[in-house]
Image (cartoon, rainbow, N blue to C red):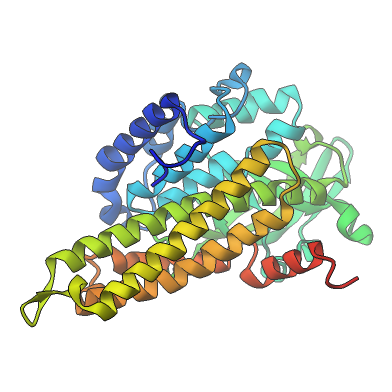
Length: 386
């Protein structure tokens, strides 16, 4: 892991690391199996994280955040996988790095007091609400509309694959305020989920990340006051793209940390398991496979930290962030396949963590921008289509 060999972390960072690690291992991990089976987890997780200051690490103290530096956020994302539930991890990152950053960047004082402050406290849960049944990476194709009616917007449409959808108190939602303008017709609305006409249509039964809810949502003549418009009308696509880069980086930070844990679990198993009178880690084929995995994970870790350093220094890192997401996502699939194979038949059994990890890693190549989209972004930044 990061401590001891990387120059980015101070003693204060490592103290914070131990605090997050202890919380995840002692208060969350013991419930992971229960929450995976239930398909959701209780609100007290957010409330406790809010009390500990985990939900507003880099946000201004004025709104209840701790005002810490970017590397403190990196530490938090690195330690979250120790909760042993990718679903919980994803839900928390939605709260901290997907639905609230736009409020910090573009929201007004009233919105920050009404929504951001209780979100940082863990008293209100949010969701990022962009994807629709016919619009994933192609954000411009969303069909959910928000038509002006005096001081209100009338919202109609549907959303899908929404993490936290059934427990969210508000949604940071992309809508078409002017369907004739394409990208320029998209706006963001801070949608209160107690609005009449809003329905959680169904909870989706997923391959992985089963410890949290992922939902389809419906909006039928939902009347929302114009004060919930986030930023300027017609600037929503820009706000979304601004958030995507940070979301992808934080996902890569947590993802590579999870791969370190996966490899360590596998290494521990291989050092204990014997076959033909020999520890299976001592068979050259297995030893070389583990060595290759360790090398790939270490290289990916260096790429992630390089990208974090660029972002921390305010540099343009669109290409590097896309590389991080692509590399960590694809490596996750490869590493999980190899680690499961090293577990043999036990890798196929739910009581071993590799079984859950094998299912969970697939989202890394799909969610938040697929591997194909990442390759497209990288190619365009390299001028390959000019």
